[in-house]
Length: 450
Image (tube, rainbow, N blue to C red):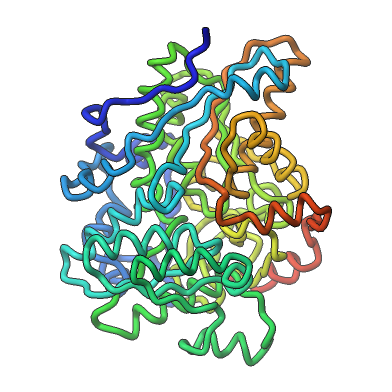
């Protein structure tokens, strides 16, 4: 009899986040100030982030204690379950064992509150009254709305316009938790107004929404900026996923040969994989795969260089894989993966050969999501379907080679708010957008000169 799920006791909830930076076998390129072209100093970040998060961004401590106030909110849904996908294995008739860590059990339905709760806590501690942020599919916006509600902070969310209209119920969810939500580009900021003057029908992008949220924070004394991916401290807070998964794989008496996560900015991928990368640094034989959409292929088609994190060039310069800060990806349904860049930590690991990357077209991805729903019962978020696609392909490859391969992937969220995208797939209206080479080449012309 196979065991289907592995549940950690609440008492086993990790008490520390894992910081990969001290373990990196290579130097991490510094974040650069665009005006001085010198490494960014903590005081440069003070207008937008609280001090504690700035410290975490550059910390050399391997483990950072999770505050009790944060742990108490985590306990509403953590530890999250690890499942073995027994029915999917049977359907594929594969000798591989497929495991998935399910982050969709959180109240907003994804991995995002792991960092939202931490960020809201540290802002509250510093006396901040209001947070501004961007959101793509609405997963991050809803997580931060919930966290701000718990810590009695106001929350303003700039939601990428295409998702604002594709996913109206995510907006409702944010408003239930007390946030104010506007479609981005908006008339509320100079950055938004500039874009709308040039293109009144702009679908928006995460890069534009970030510009609006940063501008909002910089212009108000009571407000700081909060983001759901890309930066070191955000990835740090997500590592609770992988730390739990390591204990759960021990319960299953297996260790993964392959660890898989979807990537947009890199936070859910890092959350599951970084504790396993630590094991790889120690000599464990393990492959780690980042999966991205073919229409926004930062790792597989981008270049590794310094770029802005946003369209209006309000952020510091980050060394990362980028398609160019002006790149506006097609309106794919995995809104959380529509980002031109990639977390500097994920970028550095890929550049140095510690992780692999693959890209898939969205029809292949939704096909995998439907198969997963029909075998395992959970309707996955379109973003998570990318990881499922890669896990299925790994399992089929193991079958072809007659190998007993242990596969672990992150099911980063459920897809209940994404049913219109599934509807388009089921009725044959979902199109594939491949990598628009000319558009990227055009966007790369505007890279900053360092």
